[in-house]
Amino acid sequence: MSKQELERVAQAMVAKGKGILAADESMGTIKRRFDSIKIESNESSRRAYREMLFTTKGIEEAISGVILFDETLRTAASDGTPFPQVLSRKGIIPGIKVDKGPVDLPEFPGEVVTEGLDGLRGRVKEYKELGAKFAKWRAVITISNGIPSYTCLETNAHALARYAALCQEGGLVPIVEPEVLLDGSHTVERCQEVTERALRVTFAALFLQRVYLEGMILKPSMVVSGKDCPQQAGVQEVAERTIRCLKRTVPAAVPGIAFLSGGQSAERATEHLNAMNAMGPHPWEVSFSYARALQDPALKAWQGDPVNIAAAQKIFYHRAKCNGAARSGKYSKHMEAEAA
Image (cartoon, rainbow, N blue to C red; front, side, top):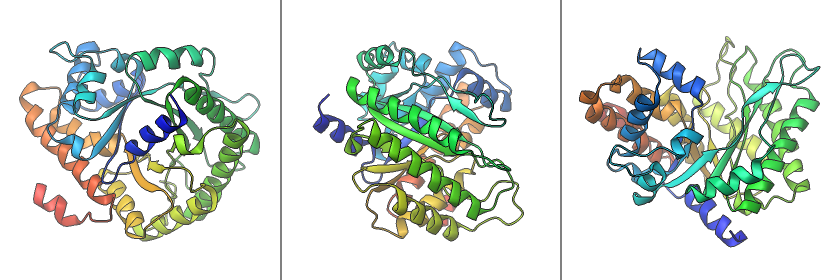
């Protein structure tokens, strides 16, 4: 894929009024989600759930792409159509999670590094043949006493940059995801400081690996208070601190920033996104790449029962449309009330 083609796909991923659905839960994560509604996680239940989401009528109005897991990329819908084709036919771009998850960073207690570079060139080639147009790799940064260390930030940034370069070489647009976790009792000020450092180190590494910035998407966490912090920052403060942090660290050449929701409630993630876009225009598109914040309400409505598919799809479409409206600062609480 040429640089122009990488750029075209990246821009389509952050098209106006649209964002990305993260449906790339690992086996462990999807099992925890299904445990919450008391259904077994097996091949057929996972397929039924993903099919319920992907076939929801009208989601292409607000969803530009979907990040899939290895199994999901290879799965077909009940009518035999492979999931990447189901999405492509709706004008939704299929993507793939390529990292192998975090492992402990030796000699750095409480810190992790993401693995998955071994054999990645071959996997990128295969995923492209299976229909993927973009990829995702998540680095995990924890805030606690004395951490993150510079070693942790630098080691994860190096892995993110090498992954991004391998993706671009193989014709996939890389989503670069340095996630600063919500877990902890840290203040919003501390979160801003750590997020800024993480992004500076990440973009330095991307530069050293000659990653083409116009052909990538950044998927950061928002600057929020730790979930156990007694003083929680309000929506406007989160928006202002997050945008300030990004303006200091993210080159304008990057086409878009697709935020992760990182454990925020569905409505709060939408409110934050809306507040940031209401402050625009910004140097890059300010979009979303949500998992739980898009899926959770629909998952609870679905309950693994085919009878509930229509109700769950209605809820999923509503969440997608709310976030689509937040892309231009046009979301309001009235939208929630109207759907109730």
